Length: 232
Image 1 (cartoon, rainbow, N blue to C red):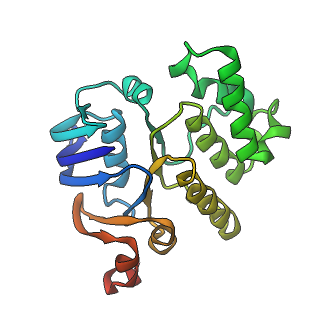
Image 2 (image 1 turned 90 degrees about the vertical axis):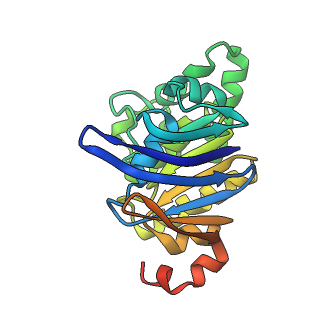
């Protein structure tokens, strides 16, 4: 589904990601593990088109997308839920979901309604809050809304950047259970997280990112048993 080859990306100050290669296959969850500042968010932004690639390749469904703008990547099915959720706090829950389907605006009203109903079915806590301003939701509800908004775009690969950030342990457990359930819907997921143990518990494979470079990779179960991961 998603193939990254020797990707370099960063900012005006210089590259942050160096020669990163990874793969997300159909129907799997891939954990991207690293401490704060390792470059996980920079990589997520480069994959979704928010940041340009400085070098290397990004292929999505056998098509090179390194030069495509972010909206076009969304239309193809590569959708990014950014760190910090970044919902539209001044709009209602329903309006946030509607904007999530903006890239598919040619779809019929009936199709949009069906997609919205599917989000409410997956996140039932959002249904009674549909008319509420999104900024008034709890942190966990906002994270559910951010994921629900992404699902409105009918993603094939979902990039989740630090979905557990700022949440209580109980809510973190709920969010990870929800993420695991998305695999049953046929969505491949790149899960960028500091929480190594919980990420690997639901993932098929994983990559460890340090100082912008992939330092370790393998099956999630094997990584979870490694001494390097045990200290994270």
